[in-house]
Image (cartoon, rainbow, N blue to C red; front, side, top):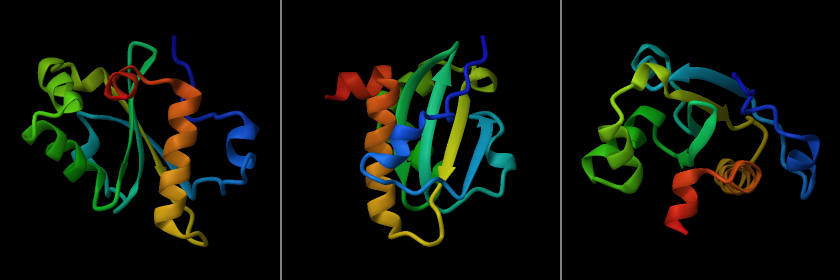
Length: 125
């Protein structure tokens, strides 16, 4: 079952108004290194149809995921344990150019967490 994770209902972007992402990149954790990745964005990790984690990166998605693994965060432990990286879907929401990036990232992250109720975000509180 391939649910379209980034097809958020319109109310996510309108209450309060959040500008739509400039771009939505769909890849896998395994393929991330092959992308010309954005410097910042919201990243959504999903596995077997379930959203596992939603996070934000201010200095590269790849660097942020490596940081999770190196610091043994809950997300890093999950990634380190689950070596099926070719099947861990990674959706990246790139901030729009005409917005305050930090404010957009903060609001979009909260909206995505509220929409998807990711497993690991729930455990982090």
